[in-house]
Structure formats: structure tokens, C-alpha cells
Length: 104
Image 1 (cartoon, rainbow, N blue to C red):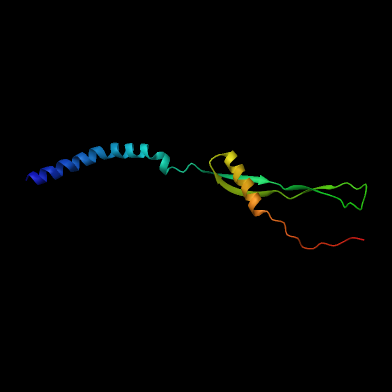
Image 2 (cartoon, rainbow, N blue to C red):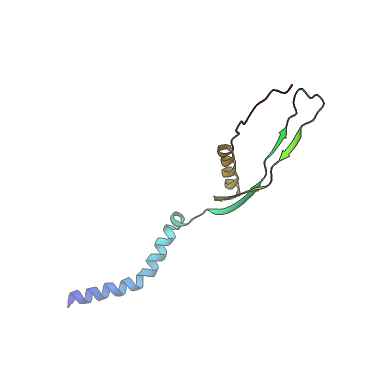
């Protein structure tokens, strides 16, 4: 009989205290489980100055602009998103030499 009474008592205490304990635990570990990252859409354009040949004196270079490029970045804030974009550009943009010819 005592065992039944104790089981019933702890069952009722569990039902009463569970919401309070749950709130307390969530409050303590909220920073650990919450996702602080936000999704950003970054649109940029690559521009470079096309230098004329040294053999054509008097010609000026041309500013070449790529069409807009959109990427999606998951970051904490806008500054972090720009830092991620910068690292992506450094790592992923590669030049590939196709041919080189001497012009007479």
C-alpha cells in the first residue's frame, strides 16, 4: 500500500513540476540548441580592367563586368555573410589558361 501511495505521489509531483522543469532546462540551454544562423541572398558582380596590349600604344583598357551572380549563404549576420562570400571567391574562382599566342 505504501508503494502505491509513493508511486501516486511522485506521479502527481511529476505532472505538476514537469512544465517548470522543462522551462528551466530550455532557458539554460536555449543558446546551445537555437540556430542563430540566418539565410542571406548575396548578389554581386565581378569587374576587372582589361589591359590593352603594350604593342598598341594609345589604346585604353576596357572595364569588363560580369552579369549579376546570386549565391545563398547561411551566416549569423550580414558582415559574416560577406566574409563567407569573400572566402568563397578566393577558394572557388580559378583562372584557366586556354592558350597564349604571340601577335605579330
